[in-house]
Image (cartoon, rainbow, N blue to C red; front, side, top):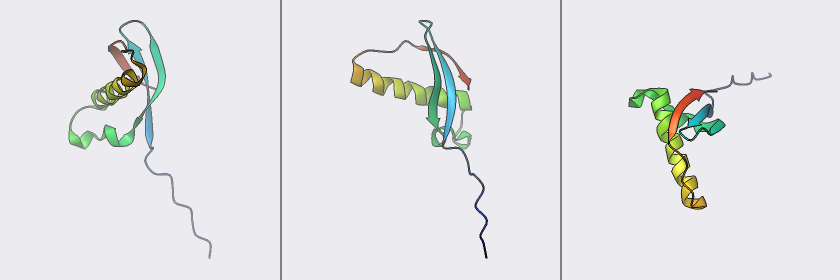
Amino acid sequence: MARKKPKGGKAAFVMFNIHYEDGSISSNRRVASEFLDESLGGKILDLARDAIQNQDEEIARHANKRRADIKSIVRA
């Protein structure tokens, strides 16, 4: 007997568009779904902001260039 394929589960990543204070834009930034668990407290955009700031800090360490502060975040 043929077995049914399982339906797709929860998405592994959520995409966000980021607007920075200096006017630059970063489109389709990926944040792992595990960092956006609302049961831990907080809203999705606040949790995404924290995750993206951590990503920016990691990039800045490697590039020796700091990114501008985040002005707004919108889910893509």
